[in-house]
Amino acid sequence: MDTTNLGRPHSRRTLLKVAGGGAAALTLPTFLIACGDDDESASTAASTTAGSGDALKVSAGSDIPKKTVKFGMAPFADATFYVIAMKQGWFDDVGITIAPAPTGVQVTPDNVVTKMVTGEADIATFYGPGKIATMAKAPQLKMFGFSDTYVGTYILVSPDVNVKTVSEQVAEGVPFDQAIKTSMAALKGQPVAFSNTGQHRDFLDQAFQLGGLTYKDVDVVATTDSKILQLAKGGKTDFTSPEGAAQNIELVNDGWKPLVSVDDLLKGLPAGDARSVAAVGHEGPAASEEFLEKERETALRFLSVMFRTIDAIHEDPKKYLPDQVPYLESVSGTKTSVQDLETIYKVNDPLIGFDEQTQYWSDVKAPTSYQTIYNAQIASAQKGGVLPKGKKYTADDAIVGKDFYDQLVALRKGYDEMLPDAKDLSGSQAALAKEAAAQYKARNYLDAYRQLKAATSAS
Image 1: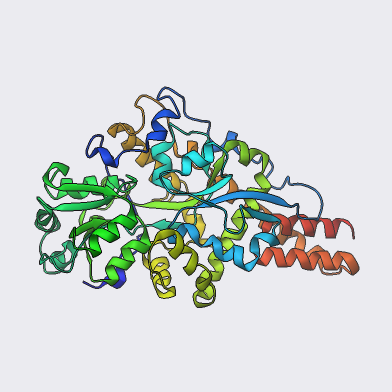
Image 2: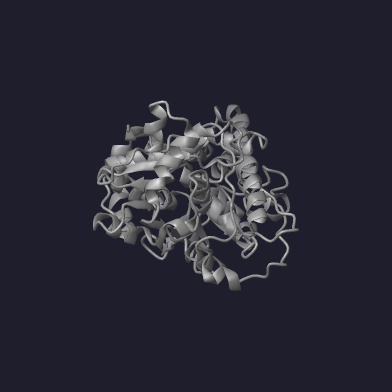
């Protein structure tokens, strides 16, 4: 199999069924069971939670205020690229000090909700399907942006096992429904190591169902990604499904192959089939409603740094990714190289820059939009018992990124419209306009607009 196409992104996604029941170890963290009531109503939609009103109504003045943000990064490649911005001083450029120094709070999928609810973290990286699964228990937490689309979800098979993958069989002309049954049959009676976060449960449920198996047919080992690597490398299991892209890439580099992948489901199931999108997710920053209301401009500046960093990785990965490698290795327990990260960002976690983010936010009925993907995931989560039935939930109850993205777009437009008024400025006004241009180039459209407005108003 050509592993260069692992997790290749697609333009259209649909939803996998989220089943209730199954292996107990693949359920939500215990904390979530206690931190809310199933009868608690979902929070209000984005338009009332973090609505901006007039998109160009921002704070007056040209100075960028200083803010300290307690920021947590999960131990995955697409959640830790922010360390590049920390080392390059790009957070400093927008007045943000990351606390605790030097790299913030260490969070994991198991503890991120706890750390955010208790205030240990103001902003933390979050995974879209994980946010959906916890929205009834922690409705105050909202994702306010996406950095990438994660499609690198697999059941991997050891090179020591003589079994053909689904893609290998399909390439030979075997029908998909037959190929997945043949491949999945190899798992019967075997230990299978799954990530214990449960965030890939939808994909695993569907792979097992299409393969004609149940979890009772295998010896489920639900554990951490680092332990999965130990088991795999120690010959204790021949079948694994880690959550992290770095862990997947490390095993692939050791010769492991995707026995079945999200890509297989997308290709094998009919276009628009409701069994293939829930394995697609998005990583991005999240914060509480209270923080987003009080520190809206801080959140906008945070997003600007995210987009600036994505630009840098796209433009010169070999220059900037070495800043990320040692940190990712320290928190993920994996050996990672710049080449590994380049592969991850090309095939597992394609980072999406500012201009390309229209696919998420501009056309809410588009197949790639947050509403299309997460409204469907919500429906399946309710059907499967992950979310309480009989309640009205929408994607806007969990994800407010459209509101923030739309304001950044409006601020950029406002800057562009003022720019002709700046061509004849001189002295301090010209210097301020030059500073505004630098912020604009760095994707900080908020302060670019504020500074240019101050410069042109004073002329």
